Structures are given as structure tokens and as C-alpha cells.
Length: 376
Image 1 (cartoon, one colour):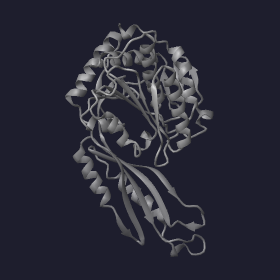
Image 2 (cartoon, rainbow, N blue to C red):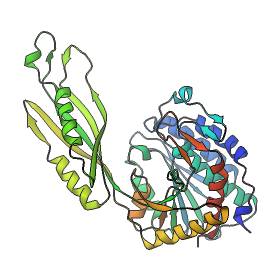
Image 3 (tube, one colour):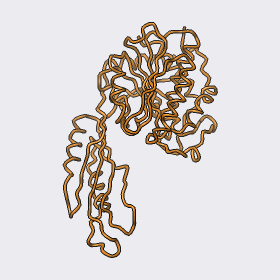
Image 4 (spheres, helix red, strand yellow):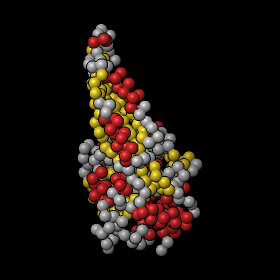
């Protein structure tokens, strides 16, 4: 009963994965994400899983919680945690169609992280087809809001992870193909400048531009970046008429630190920027935060299992901590053994060049099956 001998076929997996990629599911389109969840639910039900749809909240799409038949159902087991939302808006398929080019396959969300989610689905499909039962009960939880910091489903993920023997996240593999055993802390902020409107041509001097004030604040925010704590502004919304001095400008900022204390200092520095200058008020509101997840003995034990399986497959699985938060921040910070970034290999996530290495589908499916059949 060697899971590495299961008949994983990359071409067959691509055929099954294609409908998932062509079902576009940007985070902010709750209905689109729910359609993706329904598609995954259909595929999972077809292999004998029990699927519970959890209605979306806060404007986000549904989640699905999936369990597989097991004599110890309900006891501590393995949670596979993934997200089905992507950063790509509806219509991205016109610019980034699902296509195969030599050993690569392109498509929105194929690397982050529908490819990895599908790999674990295929692993369970082949395990079930072989008539095997995993040593521990397995649950999948697919959520709709990871790309914006998991504001709606953090509690759902933490509840699902509590008491489990292991949490596995099929996020994209690290650039060297390695796994992630810890992640840096991340905080988000909503920024607001409030100025004074006026006619931009007739009474320019009477106005106080919220846009101009925000531009100055962005430079100030990003100048706070150090080796220990970084700051960046990635979203700006303001203005409607070019002949009006803007009275309001909104922006979103992100801060990341390797240590919690550095993030705490960064948060304090950001909040201290609040105030009024030249008739324009600047306000900062804390957004969602991902706590520091530091490598722990339980996680390292999981990694050793994965490293051994990878060696049997024929590749070296390195490990390390990483930036770019995931839902592993939550489960890892809880102290639940968590292994992250064991999904597909690829490049270009969050871009119009997002792609995976086709060969990594079978490679990672073997790794997934090996983990599901060897974690006890």
C-alpha cells in the first residue's frame, strides 16, 4: 500500500483542473466565488465525500467543509486548508486563457492556489479509488477571502484546526520547491484623508485636496520601511470630477515584520501618523492582522515526514519561513502542527503570466497522498 505507486497522471489532472481555472473567482465577487465552491463541491461529492456549504458573510462567497468516510470521523485528524478566491477580476481569461505551452500551463489562479487544491482532491480521489482508508480522518476546508486577509473566515479556519493532528496548506511551493514552516506577521490599514472641496478652476485656493495630502502621506508611510518592518500602499480610491478639488481619498496599506514585536512597533508608528495638517485630516483604521507563525516541534515533525516522502519521490524538499501571509499564520500561531506551501510549482502568481509546471501536478499529488497516508 504505497501511495507513491498510485496512478497520478498530469495530463488527466490538467483536464480535471481546467474547469476550476475557467470558473473565475475574484475575492470581491461573492457570487463568482460561490460558483467555484459549487463546482468543487460537485467534484468532491462525486468521489464519496460529504460536503457542507457554509453561507458567505460580509459580502464574500460561500465556504465548503468536506469530510471523507472514516471510522474515526470526528476525532483529531488532518485538515487541508485552502482558498478558492483569486486576485484576478472577471474577464482575466481573455488576457490569460487556460493554455498549455510546452511544460507549463497558464491561467488565473492556477498557481495561487487552485492547482494545489486540485492536487489534494486528486490525492484523495486516488486513495479512495484504491479502496484505502487514511490513518486519520481527513477534512478539507475551502474558503473565499484569503487574498484580502481572511476577514470573514478566520474564525471558521481556527475552529476547524483546533485539536487537529496536522494542518496542510496547498499554497504554491517556494521558488526552490520547498515548504513553508513559518510566516511573518502582517497588518493591514485603511487610510483616509478628508479635505475641503472647491471648484478646481474657479476657486482652487479655497480647497484642500485630499488626494494631494494622501500622496504626501504615502511617501511618509513607505519611508518608515526598515529591515525589520516594511510598509507599502497598494490601493487608492479618490475623486470623481477632475474639475473638483477632492474632499476625500481612501487608501490601503500593508505592513510586514518577521517578529511580532517589530510589527507591534510598526502598528504604533502607523497609528501615530493620525492628525490634521493644512486643513486636511488623516485617519488610520486597523484592518485584519495575521500573527507571526514561528516554527514549532510539531510542524518540524510534519516537515520530516514530508521530506522523507519527497526523497522517495525523487526531489529535495527544503523548508523555511516566508513572507506573504497565508491562513497558515492562524493555524501555526495556534500551535497546531502546520505545513504550508506544499502545492504546485510555478511562477507569476498574481500576474498575467501566472503558470504552473505541469510535471509538478503528479509530483505534488504523490507528496499529498504520502502525507495523507503517513501522518498519524
